[in-house]
Amino acid sequence: MTASTRPDAGTRAGPAAPPPAGGPARPLVVSGAIAASTVTLTGLVILTPLVIAGWIAAPHSGLGLTGVLRTATGLWLAAHHVEFTLRGAGRIGMLPLGLVLLPGALLWRAGRWVVRSGEVTKLSDLGYAALALAAPYAALCGALALASRSRLASPSLLDAVIAGFLLAFCAGGLGGGRALAPWRRLFRLMPPRPRSVVLGTAGALAVLGAGGALLAGGALAVHLGEYKALDAALAPGLVGGALLVLAQLAYVPNAVGWAICYSLGPGFAFGTSTVVAPTGAAVGPLPLFPMLAALPTGTSGIPAWVSAGVLALPYAAGILGGVLVARAAPTAAVEVAPLWGFACGVATGCVIGVLAAFSGGPLGGGRLAAVGPSGWQAAIVSVLEVGVSAAVAAGFANWLRVRSDPGRSRRRSAPTTVGTGSTWTRGQTRRTGSPATVLRWAPPCSPEHGPGQPRSAVRRVDSSRLTARVNWAWQDCWAVLGPATVRQRA
Picture 1 (spheres, helix red, strand yellow):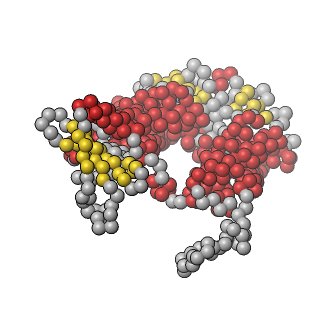
Picture 2 (cartoon, helix red, strand yellow):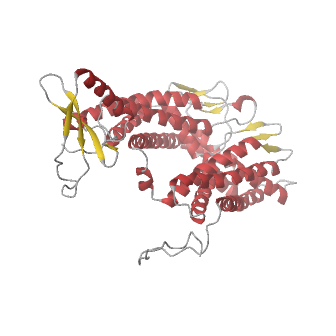
Picture 3 (tube, one colour):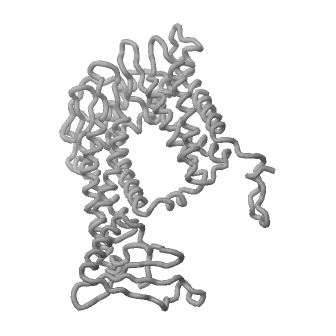
């Protein structure tokens, strides 16, 4: 029996104890390599039948089994958002974000398997498990990029390595964290103030995502006639029509990201010297893709209430995010709450900027070299609109909390343990004049004094005016940088 499975001396396993493992834990390096290889092979096995179906529907001379495998490998790399260079056509970088769900789901499962097979039990070791999966997976993506090169198309080796590593590290790390504990428990491990910012950011992103989905779906429903005309002009057939539907579904996240950028104000472009924004739309000839029928051609046919609702979407997202930050904040400092609300807007802007940058890209050379929104413009505008509205909403909601419970503003920091059980807390006493800060020291609880009973020995030290000012300054800094507030005895 190994050390990892040998029970401790003097302990007795209860009826609910888990059964011992059948052998020693597998090294993380070996588990990561096995999981990375399995994910790669599984993805190729899933995509190869789709490529064969497309080859049967539209056969091309000279494309044999080797060409089918090379095409499936290129499609797998495209699912990682790897840019391609086509001979005589330029760079292709506007790839469907929906394809990322396939390798992401497989890497999620792989991360859980690596954590369980490696018997990882500490959250601090989760990064090593994710790294053990991401490193060999990035190497495999680079090898596939080299193997799938041909005289017609060549994927970017650097993009394949970087995208494979980042996707495996993020998706595998999240899956491994879920294998350690439920989401609620992992969420509670975060510090209280960053946790409130994460909650507010999630709420703001949910509002933006729902609004973008409604905007994209409504635009497509309005131009349903043009959509049907484009689909009929292509005449893809039964198998080609099914593949065309799958391709359009894969581009749905891109359409949602474009709709979000449209509501922010900067909009997006579909070609050089073009713009699609609430102020107007100027586009040139478009490719024969049915989803592009949803693009507006001007502002004359858009009702005023629709334009107002679209422009109010980021502010509504900021208001919800700020309220969530104020409700989940550990303290009730009126002067600090707007700062954390603005931090929620900054985090939201960073996510929107990344989404905007990855939702677009070049579609060849010439006029279609610039397609999609600008990542840095979307990020800056989102930070300003969502951040300011979240700061105002967080400050107002927090002011209402303080007004409804004035004693909450005096319970702003947790007790700090000093020595062996001694506890220092901060409080206030009412005197004739300005409030004076006092330090209260309470010894550890004795056996006859339980945690819920008052302690007898309490020494109060009244500070002078200079010491009071220093303590007030320290208390304000502690409200910003100190730990979370817990309930103290009145």
